[in-house]
Amino acid sequence: MTTATPKAPLRSAAMIASIADAGVPTTKAPLGAALNKVAESDPRIVGLSADLAKYTDMHIFRDKFPDRFFQMGMAEQSLLMAAAGMAEVGLVPFASTYSVFATRRAYDFLCLDIAEPNINVNIMAALPGLTTGYGPSHQATEDINILRGIPNLTIIDPCDAVDIEQAIPQLVDTPGPTYTRLLRGAVPRILDQYDYEFELGKAKVVRPGDDALLVSSGLMTMRALLVAEELSKQGIEVSVLHCATIKPFDEETVAREVNTDRPVFTLENHTVIGGLFSCVAEALAKQGIGKKIHHIALPDEFLAAGALPTLHDRYGLSKNAVLERVLQELKKP
Image (cartoon, rainbow, N blue to C red; front, side, top):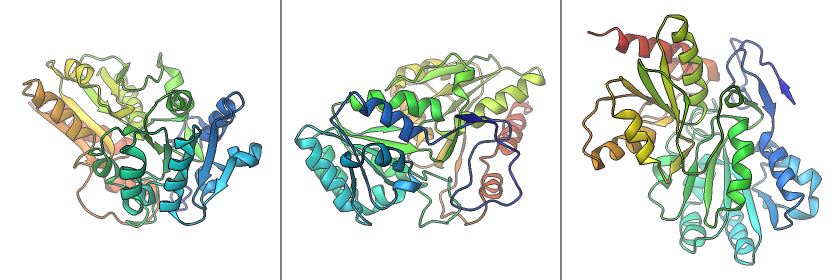
């Protein structure tokens, strides 16, 4: 079900606030619906959660397939080890928890029990980056940086419900492990307004434009598209390149799109260290492309707690903050 999102209130609950901007439609719990659809014809699919099914949208799967759902309690190491065992016997597990717990608390289990044997365990990690106002204990601002160095691991940073819905079947068919920065609850739905299809491992030009290039991932692609539409009203045509897959990174497409005379910005809901900006810079360096990249990202610090709209303004991720930053750079001589 898709509904229009009302204008963001001045205050919002730190944990459950939607990250959809005003006027952007939303879809409720797209992970659960997409997983149920695939599971109807694939009995190998099982769901697990570490006492967070309701808060990672896994409860949708639990309610429809109770015999294929496993509640592991508040024990993320056990969650990943159980998922690894299921994958070893031919099942396709989707394990859900918060990003901070999957990365900081259960890293060794993800690395050695799942990635090293290269088995199909799909980790659906909610509250990535600055999608909760509960402070550093719940804000996974560095999860991509932590995980990029693990061999065999595919990392997905979806923009919206369209990305999630289209990614699930492809994750089922991916032989090795995957980590998805899950958007939960009322998830934005914006990519279906463009000629876009999710393709694992590929970056896609969602919106063309000759005046600047915004290279984005995750919810920041929503912001990039909204900013591009605003700039278009001012006669400035901005291209948006969406990198839904962070690893393996589509270096060829990114380098081709960046290697023009257009100013380039990276936009990510992640610390500036080790995320999308780093991926782009590495890709350009490998190909000998000298190009200045303006980065819009979270700072290298522990972030404050509070209401999400306030925090996104404070740390430069809101639509207005991005718009102001891009205009500022474009107006420079």
